[in-house]
Amino acid sequence: MCGIVGYVGEENPKDFLLESLKKLEYRGYDSSGIALQNNDNIQIIKCSGKIQDLEDKIGKSNLIHSHLGIAHTRWATHGEANERNAHPHRVGKVTIVHNGIIENANELKNRLVNEGIVFCSETDTEIACAVFNYYYRGNPIEAIENAIQELKGSYAFGILFEDQDALYAVRKDSPLIVGLGENENYIASDILAIADSTKKYMLLEDDEIAEITKDRVTVYYNREVINKEVLDVPENVESANKGTYRHFMLKEIMEEPFVLRRMINHYLYHSEELFDITPYEEIHIVACGSALYAGMIGKSLFEEKAHIRCVADVASEYRYKTTLYDRKTLVILVSQSGETADTIAAMRKAIENNVDTLAIVNVKTSTIAREAKYHLFIEAGPEIAVATTKAYLLQTAMFSLLALNAAHKKGLEENYDLIMKNLQNLPSLLKKVLDDKDYIQKMAIDIKDARDAFFIGRGVDYSMCLEGSLKLKEVSYTHCDAYQAGELKHGTISLIEDGVPVFVIITDDKIKDKTESNAIEVEARKAKVFTITNDESIKTHYDKYVVPKIDDYFQPILVVPVFQLLGYYVALARGLDIDQPRNLAKSVTVE
Ligand code: AGP
Image 1 (cartoon, helix red, strand yellow):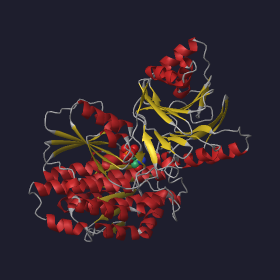
Image 2 (tube, helix red, strand yellow):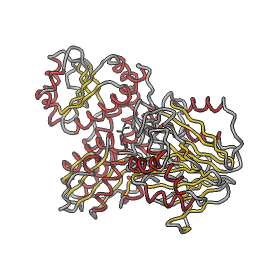
Image 3 (cartoon, protein in one colour):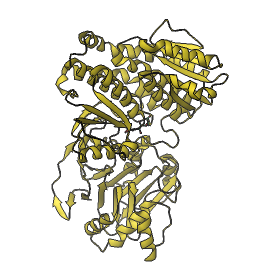
């Protein structure tokens, strides 16, 4: 996901822009740049690579005197990750930075080329900039209003006009906020970028245009000035730093017992805030990646424990498929960032069909948090590492609480009181697992040279396999696949060869013998079988790690962190960029 920051005030913007961009590094990017303005003089410096590369290039430049500027980190969509395609882009009197995708860019480009405009990049952003410039006749608001009528797709723009001593901003579907300071104001695509500089901000809604000077913010909608509510920066937007950890990923794994206890205690003492799913005849859980895998655990629990029909579906498919809403349906959107494009689209499809929507999100100011009819915040705090860990864990825990609450309301859970008592102990049990990190690191070093790895399990164990596989894949670049243990015989087993690691998850007593048979099958073909289980009696094949046994609702909470640590330590052993794995972004805000 790209990052936008802007500054207008009494200082030179360079330091603020660079420091703010660094707080957005976690979202993933491949180039960056800044533009400084002094009346009709605009200086643009940009480069591919890391922000440090940009900082070095700026250090070698003669900067203009300026009090106004914009900056950007780009995650390549249209056009390669290089300096030419990096933002900011300038056409004529207009300079912009952009998050999102302009879907009719080619159509607009053809028209503008016919009018003699020459483009030097491959980006949709430069085309959008040309449209703003095309309509600019001295009135920036009019130019922006006219231009956005032409632009189709998603956008958040930071805009400079050569002869205007103000910063302009407009958005549609991509988040953008205006931060309010003392004799200075800011824009940012993520509140984290400016949380250390301001405690007050405005949230721009779609097609609202902000004109920002150092001491005034005017917001227009349909060419009329509107009043905007000034919001307080949420207190839990802690300034994101690594503390004593080498990587955000390990820091966020180690925070899990704390944030889990915080969430459990909150809902133990405010159980009325726990959403009641029992009135619904059908539940659709819709998300992407790890959020979907948390939802799959939710699906199993909703059906098995609360006897509510449920499907878990990937958002990029759900948004386009024909969906029957012929029963009283609840659509649950799961998203750490709350800005994943496909999940937003799935949510809007449900809203258009007048179906109730519940958001399980981490970022309170996000689009999904604001647009869903109901929301449950997981309060994981800022999650900076691209590979989600604590947020995934709390998403899973939230589903467990919802399922337990529903089973209890329907009189289906006879052990409710005991489970609630044990729940208090869950964070301490999780801490015990994390304290075994040296053992798990040993496991990681054992497989650090493996080219492939497989994860097998049945039922909820299979849903955990999917997340374990994704973690190892995305941070260590190991080719991993997760399979339902019963599926191996239908083809996959041909991939099992001497020494290949196979992680077998066995936590479900009802089917442990079946999965144990599958472990024997792959061992017979010389696989290295690592068993992750809650049952000491399960045979040790090549290696085994036993997690504390707890009720079905919360067992995944003690299993998946094993794989989070495994992925971390394999990536560490390989010397990889753990917090920002190649090609990945923290929030995928494009289709
Ligand atoms: C998880 O490690 C990945 N980074 C990715 O699968 C992520 O879970 C997915 O993109 C969904 O993101 P969201 O929770 O912010 O919607």
